[in-house]
Length: 540
Image 1 (cartoon, rainbow, N blue to C red):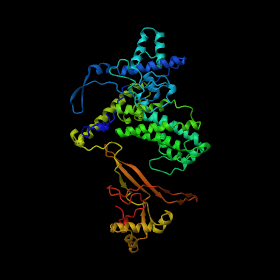
Image 2 (image 1 turned 90 degrees about the vertical axis):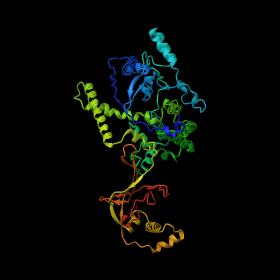
Image 3 (image 1 turned 90 degrees about the horizontal axis):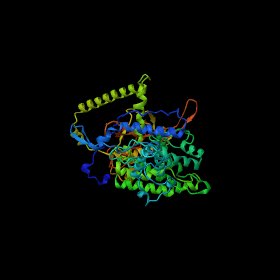
Image 4 (image 1 turned 45 degrees about the horizontal axis):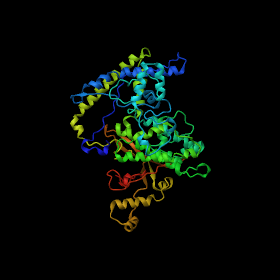
């Protein structure tokens, strides 16, 4: 059931994410084993044995149920089960026993992953769990038969996967989308590299250097073609201006770049639709349409000799996104970006707090104490706030990311006083005086028509020669949970100047789209102005 089908009165605010460390898995590489195939099998068996030991309590709890208390103290009989597995592609194959190059969820042939049909793609069935279990069951009968059975259905010969005895679990239904590794470090990494190959490193880097500074976009002053070990955050920043790199790019042999632009735009649309924090039937249809447009135009990379095929599992897995979002909810619940960040808290910081001897016991003790302190601190804040659970439920909830209210903010004091004639010259605003007269006239007489407004300008004289100038105007947003303010966007305006070394430093003038409508309480005609005249009270 999607959000559009749920009555408004039963929509609930999603609970905050909480991660609890259950254990550390061994990181040994078994260097003493020289046979690589045998080493890989032993490491896989070791992983499943350790995870199976951790999840062993779920076998009886999922079947018989356990009593669990809510935050209000009420007891309920719950049946906890393993519902989803979050991991990157190698970890997904390790859990599902799949072979490299195969889809970890469905049984589509690895040599046909690049083929896409809008009608048949939704009907691709996931892997048959019964066949998998039958093949695993032959391990106790005959070893050679076990190997043949696993090879026939293309799974790794792992006799005791950790999910074998877990109740109500279909491991191939539990594989979830992963924005970080599948999209940013997978699909978008490929697309960006293909674009660089088509246009050339020099052209791409030159276009990156010409990008104007922006509050929400990183400027790669040295380009992006020579970067190594690119992180997911850097790919995120590249995606924000990727369309600008290809919008008028000349292609070899005089080909039109229309298909390239459509293809890049389609995958960008899918990327951002997939990250919505709330979904409806309409947004899921938009996702499906974006994916269809991408596959329709992707052959441009084959025509330009960049690719020979698209049998890439991460690109194929995009066809499962809509189905998995419908089952499990939005992708922000399963993004490995959050768990990757926990390596610092649960591993690196914990290890740094030890004396590097017998570290595992010290790390777990340190984490246990830290979690108790955090829970106690949260309880104290909740107690001092004086808010009960019923009061919190009465708050009006806005889905995260959909609150577009912004508050304009300026520094208490201007950067400096500037003569009016210098504003027209250095800030390249020759019509500043006229615009200022129009603004003052409309502020005093908002009912003036165009002709009356032009005549009234002759009666306005400035009783000042200097104006305070702000170089930055910020727009703040408020976090609906914590109440903390943060900068959502900023507009800069700095005139060019000459340094002490006689070097000319170019100015910066951001382009701002100003909404002068009356529907906004906090924004008026002064939005986007970088020169603010507080002494004449022309701003609010």
